[in-house]
Length: 328
Image (tube, rainbow, N blue to C red; front, top):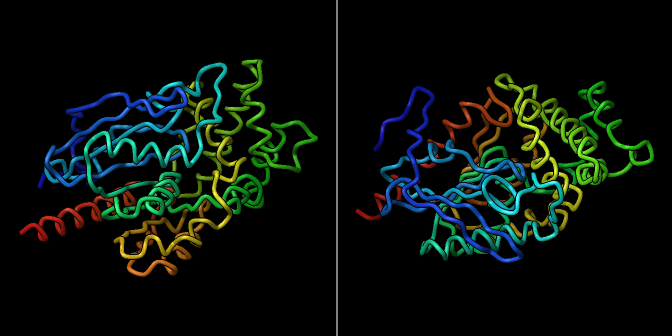
């Protein structure tokens, strides 16, 4: 077992293999593999949608025990084409496309079955993938639990105005008056694809400022998107609003409706009690409907933070030990 740092993470080792995978529709995905080439396979799904991967995902797994796969989902990070381009077509970027991409990457890397880890949007994607390919998933480790329902995105884009009324009015007023009572995700999406770069940049800033606002109640929260590079702001805002304005390309209630497909897959659900932008009720409902799932509620964090990282690593460590015990 490798040693961890003071915050509990494993060393952020460099990948020993990486590449680009063509997945059709003109898209190519950046992927990388780190850790033990003969270790327990695992794939980490980043959030957003559209935040892209980062070296921190490698540090959630013991590099001596895991073969860790990380990749950038369509249109973000180092995958191409990029949502930072002045003009970009997102029509071939849906949940169904991403699920197919994960499976294509598994086949490309010659992996039979793997642990799937995801955070925030990555949870919804992990659940959709596991329901499509349950025979390919050994375990699930899911942090900051979401399920892609419109009720979740309506909560963030409209209902949270009751918690932050001043900031929400500024967010709402970032779209034309005629669209302020409708789907704010769709209204922002149109602005984010406006021919005028100043209109696009203003909409991206407004969206990212609101994202930071509704995640700011957690004890360990710090500004993130609102202080990010303008190109990154544009990319993530475009992809998030694309997904949210289309109901995450899922039937309402689909994940919970199809939960039986996950029965028998060990799972750890991790959620912060201070996660106001994603209330605990989603994780609770999923846990209640999913026999064998474990719910870990963290009383000192929100949509992320060190204690959530520690809980993820505790879960991945446990599954690695169980796999080793089965071998011996």
